[in-house]
Image (cartoon, rainbow, N blue to C red; front, side):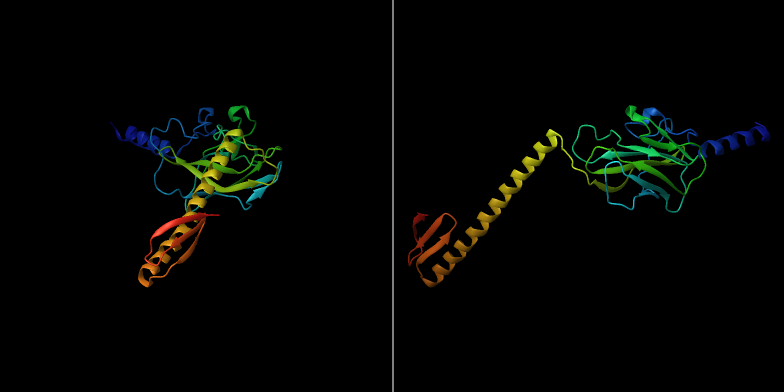
Length: 241
């Protein structure tokens, strides 16, 4: 191979390392948010990127700025959606719609939801960019923004999340969520009752110990009545109230 051909292949190799899809992630990434055609797994190291939202709550129909930022590096590609946090079967279904106001990004209509996903419009280096998300008119509960950041073909990070935001509108939870909530509530009260009962039994045993040492007798108050203790600490009666 002559030097000219070697230089050509070398330059092509460098170019391929720095490119992402110039027109954004494909529709096939709508559900998984995983890049396609990269041929390598995502990075396992901490991501040098973050999603920043200054607010912690929002009203139905409100528009919120979402900042995509590289801490010490840059990114060339992005795949950004808003997802529900509540226990629905459609947690991968995006919510609301995005407006970009820049030529660096455009939107995709994932799952038929118009402008529900943001992706890059070119493969230029980006350090900090802002897009705008508009919440659904109907209250949706808690939401979180999730993104895949791409530096180049072989270097990308997935599962980058923002803080959780709460919808200030009235929310009707799905039946499955209500069922889970009731079960959790019952379990909580059951554990609380057991803890309370245990806390009342412990003083009885402490008093019995004192009885053994001092030879005292009398009634020891208990949750369901009184335990009568003789001078030699023999329990022979439980008087239920």
